[in-house]
Length: 597
Image (cartoon, rainbow, N blue to C red; front, side):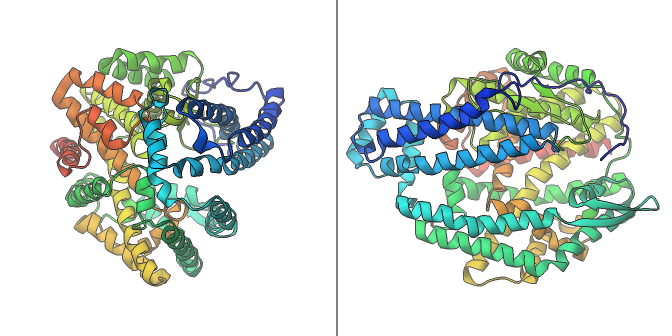
């Protein structure tokens, strides 16, 4: 247990109130929710199975309303169990409830699979009638997407077999990877004392002020991955091969196609994203040469890319951070300010760090009729102020899109970070205008740029590695050394001559959970990031006339595909010229940093 004392920040008593969800584990409505989900889905199946093709548009709307009514209570129960677990990871009741809800959700999904399969098999003339029906206007985008993608569906029996097969196939390999690498334990010498660390704790040593500590930490971390190279490569090969087999059965054109279709992004939009990001690797090179100069290092290795900057120790109380964030939002838009303030006023934020609290930060939303919750670990660092703005941006997005139905309420991943990153940028600009201390400005700019490069160019590098690895494994299984060589090529392409390459980093691919758990997931981070930078550049060009368009865009949730939604803010995401606006914004930040250094 962590018994280390931390300075008071004023966040200690900022705890959320979850009574709007459930009053506690003894709340009788928890068991009632689980029981009702089981009985209601049974009734739904009896009512609609084999009959979807016979429904008129009003009856189809009623069925869809019923389906959302089935799912909503489980969404809220899942949210509650995860929120409680996040604040106390030692809570066994929360763990048991999470498992129960996951089991109930899995059963619900399996029972409902018939509906979209039957809808996808409708004759074109019947679908065309539904598409024009005004009563289905709130559902038609998702229905149209399901109908368009029905060609990738298998029969109900085959879909059930795949779900069951995955339990001992790809899902089992993913579970093995996560459990095995999570079990890693490292002995590491720090301040003359041998300490036992897990992987997260050891990786956090990359932020240590001492370069030798950073280097030793990453050598120790990747040495274990190299030792297990045969196992980790075998797991990866099996996951990729399993995906290739399923992709072939479903008729997907390329390994990345399933994710593009899930995100409803065209191949052209994703290729434009990869192209423009790769073209701008010179900015990565330029930034890390500046960082080497700021740190006064003769050589900058990959272990140093997250090294802390000098004079970045300024701290903030919770109330100071709250005031800065709200002032920044008020400068941008009064509604943004009001919505963010309501999160504080209504006790929807959990802020302190505690021994058994989960790390990190997030915003949680479940159903449109319920405001979101924000989870923080506030320690008073400048980064924590940015994190507060980021998560409140998510909350604002959720509140603006609450007019949507459940199916359209949650943004798809490529658009999910739009309001959060935009809110950070609003805060950063406000910060830079308000701050007079040169060193603090340098710290702000470097922190922002490192976030940008980590969630854009670095994710682009991961994505390029995945594309090449999947293509190669589709032809022949790769050894751990083959995968390391592929990864090294991408590292060198991204960082150029700004970095001294040490051999242990060739094994970094084996430590990236997303490439194992959700192939091609990572490009969405880059998409979301660069989309926001381009939109922010557009805001700087258009001024206040941009704001109502932006709020309409956020209010739309996932009610249309990303290309159409982006057009609300006059953005063409299929055109590389649009993406180059984001590169211009990143270049502007590097120019500002260079002028200060």
